[in-house]
Amino acid sequence: MENLPAPTRWQRIAGGGTLWIGLVLVVLYAVFSLLRPHAFPTRFTLQTLLIETSVLLVLSIGMTFVIITGGIDLSVGMVLIFSGVLAAKTMERLSPGGDATQAGWGLITLGLLTSIAGGALWGLINGLLVAKAKIPPLIVTLGSLGAALGAAQLITGGVDTRTVPGKLRDTLGFGTLLGGVPILVLVAATVTVVGAWLLHTTRFGRYTYAIGSNAEASRRAGIGVTRHLTLVYLMAGTLSGLAGFMNLAYFGTTTIAGHGTDNLDAIAGVVIGGTSLFGGTGTVLGTVIGVFIPSVLRKGFVIVGVPVFWQPIAVSVVLVAAVWFDQLRRRSRDRK
Picture 1 (tube, rainbow, N blue to C red):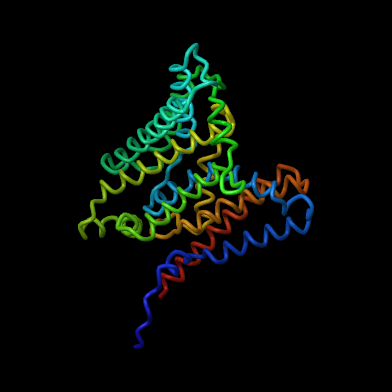
Picture 2 (cartoon, helix red, strand yellow):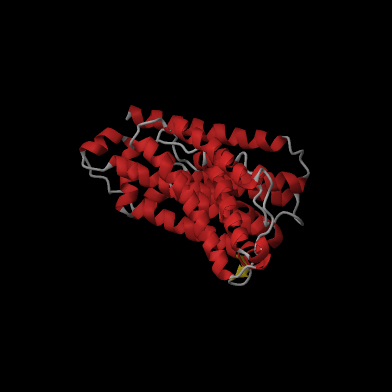
């Protein structure tokens, strides 16, 4: 039998249905551009689309690793809220007179570290309960979802904190670099590149795929499954903390009531991007495309004037189609 060449690294990264998902995104962008040629394919629309998707993309990179291991994390949206609240309250409490609007970079840096630490704490708790206590991740992260939101409301009394440093909003929230590229987009792009490198070129990434394919076989092969799963959930929580700080910088408030579907949006983006809910398959490139498909749909519907009620229906259709395609691919693979 003729020996087939091993797939290249690019083939592994671009596999798993990423090509057809990318074509879907291109078609959607082209359709909306034809329908509204003077409004949709503009620099302003593209810039706002990228900014609005940046926070969700950071959440989705962590979610990609979690789902590839065969797990799930329903808590990322509430951890985002908790981390943003923790950062805002830290900066407010340490500012003279309790007004953080004039805070300097030292206090802003402390707020960033606090936000990341808060997210990492929830991720560590999730990881230990999933990996060590052997509690199903659905139950663990569903509990964390409620607990993180409750903790945020206890800290704030249920009232959004609005005393956000002006320097933070002007620089991270609305600042640009490299000829007009929003800094929030650059942060999300950096996280994406690092996530792709980690998943596709390192031992950590190989272990992530192996555990998602067969955790018991990975354990027998000498992989520290418990430790690795803990680190994966820790990473997801840490990125949720970073996303919380990005959200705080952009909106200038903690937006406690504004992230009820972030967890589902992140999961949808990852699954639409070709990552299998059964674990063992997925790419960061696919996640990037998958996250942008619902964002383009929403933005396009608003510009075209389609009623907002159709937006979740369209996203749901794309999500179900992605899962159906994944099942067809698995059946085809199992028959070989």
